[in-house]
Image (cartoon, rainbow, N blue to C red; front, side, top):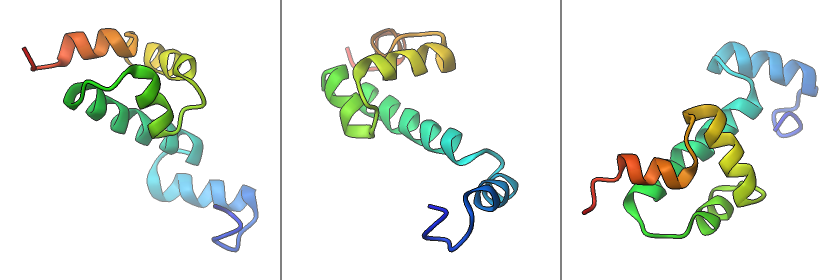
Amino acid sequence: MAQRAGMSERNFVRQFTRDVGQNPSDYVMNARCERATTLLLETGLPVKTIAHRVGFSSDDQMRKVFNRKFSLTPREYRERFSTAA
């Protein structure tokens, strides 16, 4: 991203953080989580498929991120917040 913006990585991170309010890696991880939660709640896709579809390297990485962010596994998140009967 820094190269596309024509900036050094350090300056890009500083500017991005100032403009967006979080660093680029946190922004990307939050975007992945947001998309994953939508897919968990609105589809019956397996967690592994969702993990790869939204850009996690594995379903294990997604599980670890979900545990840190929500204190739930993706499966638990789906069970708790899904409105589908």
